[in-house]
Length: 233
Length: 233
View 1 (tube, each protein chain N blue to C red):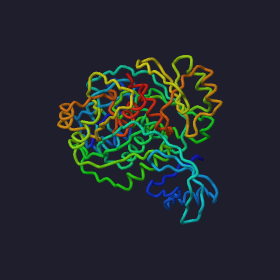
View 2 (cartoon, rainbow over the protein chains, first blue to last red; view 1 turned 180 degrees about the vertical axis):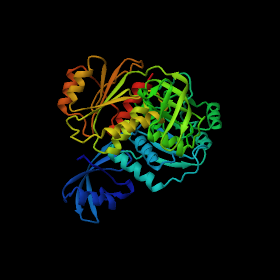
View 3 (cartoon, rainbow over the protein chains, first blue to last red; view 1 turned 135 degrees about the horizontal axis):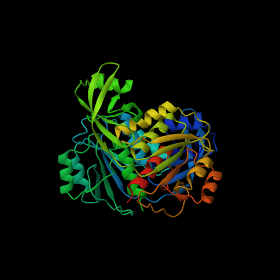
View 4 (cartoon, one colour; view 1 turned 90 degrees about the vertical axis):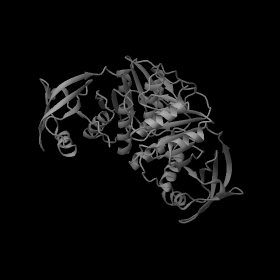
């Protein structure tokens, strides 16, 4: 059992160094961890701050405290992941969890041409992201959004950053820069990007990379491309 | 739905180009895919061969065929992954699945000092490995074994290969060679390797690498270290 929990309280709920925990977090603090008034817990606001919080009120429904110290973590390298929506919810959530752990700053869930119209449940996505942020003790909460078209994603982000697409049939290699310049990483859904999407990407100057000769599931490709983008040096 | 299934028949069950499928595979071929005698399916023997097999008998309990063509895939780079056993079975199986997809050649499940005595179910491990091999259309079946001690693993493999341990508190960087030389990759269980295990690893000349400043779950570290070992170039 891990004893170093990190709790999450959004910045708008922290006022003059006082904060109140959500019901879920309150339950965890009061019932699971059996904390008492006076105990210190660690809290992040999801925008770079980790705080020591001394508990003032601890009861079943309400847990509140005051910030006694704040530590700031610099912003992370800007890594947007746009991934085709996976039909299996469990694998989609796994991909999201892993992306957060591996340092994504924004997740774009794309209903690309081969992804179909699988419904995305916003509350589940948000819960998965928050939980992975806390678990990996990362004080930055990644943003996320849903998009109906791959072409829109490309149009919106290609001017501002290097764009790299994972594609199984690529010859040659891509040299990861190993620096902190902004990137958009593209991973297809289970059926891959459509030939038209790939063509448009190539025409837009997107760099194509192979993730090996084996066929990777979407969530595996997500792990691989983020590992390479953030850890290759 | 994927239409390019790869079936698995171990080499000892292929005789004079004739083979019979296991009951599970037979069910899949006869009942799910509704194949008929004369149809061709693709089969691997897990030791580098992918075969076209013409079905001769297709009924509920028995499916058999004959090999009409064989394609050989060269052996993959030798990558042994020794990982601490994860308590949550779902995450353990996920780590195994991802390791196979990302090109591991052998998985060593280690009851290291912080892993505890979580029971490993051999049939589940084998099933997970076979399923991931088929899914990724990889004609090599990774081996696996279970070990009671991290020190035994180190003693057995350290002479024959480069050994790299993922460790959260490492300064400096490790240069992945990007070649096919044999490697042993070490990933700790949820609580990490013990200080004594780390000390012994360092004393044995094991290279330590950091997988970023965030705390990674075991299965995430497995994805990251194999991506780096097999895809960094």
